Length: 139
Image (cartoon, rainbow, N blue to C red; front, side):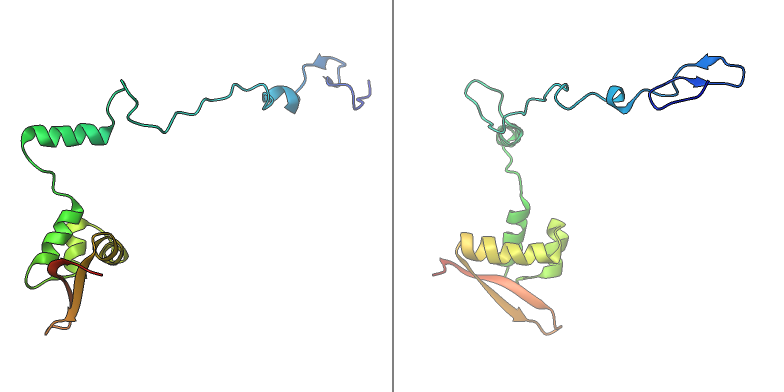
């Protein structure tokens, strides 16, 4: 029995018919319009009557313990307020940030957002040190 394009069965030499080797591609996977659509979760947090977000929970826990959580920003500002100032390496060690992140923090947050004056000078050992000059606002 010859095999043609429309016949899905195969024959063996004895003339026995076998089941099709595989399902057609259209039956193997569901069509995209048949799949149920997933609903997106709302990005809005802090809904009235809802559960508090993680940040709110952590802040509440720190306040209830009577301790203030020391942030990485606070650690860098403490180093910058010292009389000697701080090197990029010291700020990287204190925060775990990379050098470009420390420089971005100094430029974007300390200078622009907080409005503090940051002074940079090269020390005797050749390392550049940064420090906050006074606590007056720049500009």
